[in-house]
Image (cartoon, rainbow, N blue to C red; front, side, top):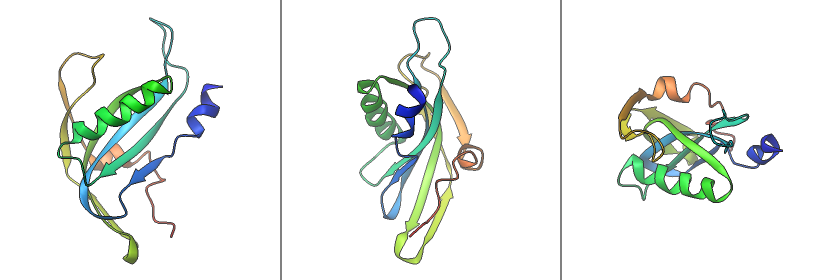
Length: 125
């Protein structure tokens, strides 16, 4: 059941044009206390409105929690997206808080490592 619900979450949601911050997020079923999550998927979210990477993570993780999922931030960076020309450039990295349920440490992960498992970040049309 969790896998079917996760399938309903879009892999990628980014603004259509411009330069903006993005975050790679692992979404997983919220397990009973003390047990590992059974199902998960990685999603990319990127928006021009976000001043900080954490702004995106906070909004998305809040939405996912309302739907019964937990999240963890895997990294982020910047995207330059020119949808009309079917061009996208992913670069940089972010220093981002790993989440409210984890110790207040920061992780640094490059976009090359972070987006490799997310082939949905391509231009289909």
